[in-house]
Length: 388
Image 1 (cartoon, rainbow, N blue to C red):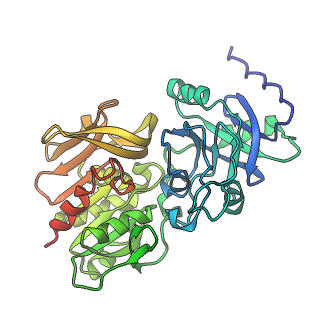
Image 2: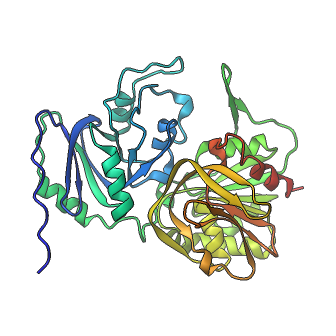
Image 3: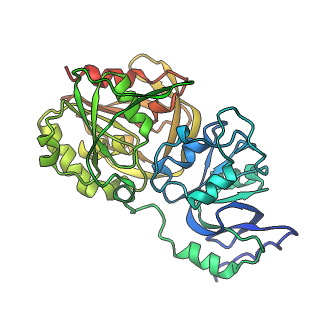
């Protein structure tokens, strides 16, 4: 006989929000942000800063982010720290209530911003216990809900969580990608001046495929010396070649790489046959791995947060990186034509590859997120240096 679903925990006084896991486990809290409910996979992020960047990273589409750092939202929000304006994380879970913003760059309150963006927040949760549960049992599907009167149909929310198919097999890149081609105009940020403009001088031309890209990636390509044109995820080989690229960049993004690879991999393989220089980050790295003949697999809990140590195998240097991925290239499936260049010092999973007979490489982490803070910018310089 199958085990009966656990009885929901009694609702404490004042609870206006709830997280309902697909196994029937119920976690109560105080709702903030948008009123309503959203379904997704619950993950955790260990970063101490950058919550607005996290919540606007398209790689988090279909996910509910548990922040392990207890004080989230206390520096407010501003327009400069947005990474995209497309769908990303559907909600977040925090330990402490969001306090009034206290930062000279703040232009609004985190809770108000979440409500404006349609994202549900849940405060007052033992995030350490939830993180430990994810580490032991894996990332669960769940529904996060908020209503001021605190009334929730728990059985209906359990059913909704159980019926959600999960991220495995789900192609989200085409949902969060740009729909039209555009020339990237922005450059990096400086205090007091904001974001600069792309220089107009002659530069190598990079065509960046947007699988759900963070804008800061394009800014760093410009900083490294490139001119960037961004194209949609489902771009054809012919459309790319018409742009006469000196190199092609494969962006980060959400969902299952094997699902996105059904249309992306043939294009990448055709570019590899033409020996077009290629650089991939995160999902783009996974797409490159698939195109080279490797396989990807869903991770038990994923890697999300700052200060993830990655070993560069060529010289033993350890890079301090930022990560956000729930899938990885299976390093046991790498063909002889692919060299493993980086590995995670947490669990030995693949974090970098280079093709031996092509000008193509990728990393699993996010060098544009200023990890280290400058440990990984050399990757942009390396790529642009290949384009001459």
